[in-house]
Length: 330
Image 1 (cartoon, helix red, strand yellow):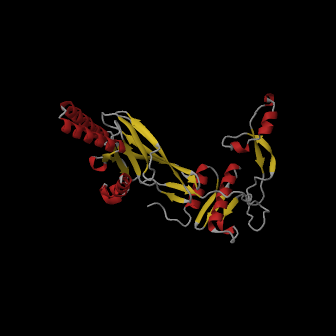
Image 2 (cartoon, rainbow, N blue to C red):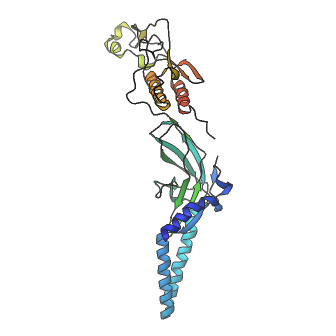
Image 3 (cartoon, one colour):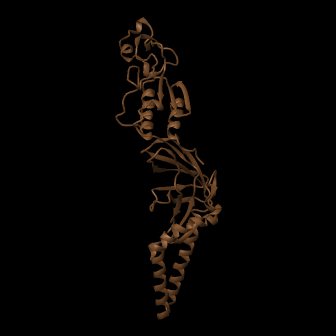
């Protein structure tokens, strides 16, 4: 019976929240209307104990029994108010979210802000579909705590978290108070890189080959210049150089032919591969090109990105792969 009641409450309390299920953007205050409180299992047992004490006191006319019963009832009422106040008037803000690859765990930051003079203890936070919250925080008066919630991902695109549930049973555990929060945050999920993908489509690689920057024709080493990639440092030569001849840092120098860029083109991949596998292969090639410091152009449908390299260039290509055929966030 108790489990059925808890299930009914879990399904229905969300409909009592303000704004009919709209996402909570910006800072949200846990007002009185957003806090729900019911007796816990221990609280129900305590109610039964009070009933037994009251019946026994009435039957035997025990004055001390009446005093003990009403004293215990007063403690329970104080605990109910304290449990409610432990959650009410907290403020919630969504934090940063970082893109992940499909199959990885996305992280959502939640800032719990306490601007009151009352310290809050044992505030539990997690997604509502978890029966037992995995994160517990104490928030001193005038401070804030940051909770990182994790969400497994399976497919590329935008991943939105479920409702977040904050709950507490402090101080005595006779009551449980909780509130729901619907964050507007979303995390971008990149395609999972293909395992065992063929190497980069360098010149001479067959029908899917493209031109490459002259990064395969080693022409020697030269003195290090500001802006040179650390991946092109000639570490073996650096280790052999005598400091007396000057300049210990050198980089590898390449010379290219007529074509001077690597082009990763979705349309040049075999048509026998399904769309998701082609996206996974392009994802792998983008990562491989970045790891080798090779400038590359990127073509994916209407998306045309000129040759380049670096974190911003890689992020733009991966974003296009993640959102291919998918509408942007609401």
